[in-house]
Image (cartoon, helix red, strand yellow):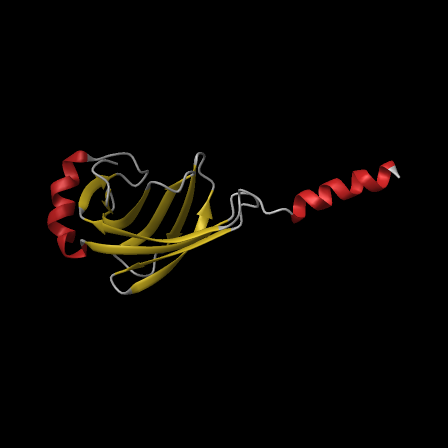
Length: 145
């Protein structure tokens, strides 16, 4: 009889709605801050103005739809930017839910990144643009990298 109870308790817990149920939402950001970065991702502040001057026409809204189950960590996201939708893949970044898409076939956009904190209260989008062999540009809604 004890074994039956021990088997029923986990089954009841799994059947009970969890506080960590799937969360879904749509986030809208206006991307208008440009930053120069080296190919390894480190800042290159001397390229900030060149990035802004070169890619000013890319400033605009990014709309991200996401679904995240904090318990199972099954998650998906997609970002629409300049009329094109990018299916993002989960990234393993600690302390946040992060997604990315990287490509080489549609310059100048090299990458699209979306991140939202564990409390679902703060998020950002980043678009990585290819400038030249030594510099990439980041277009984001954030004031800083």
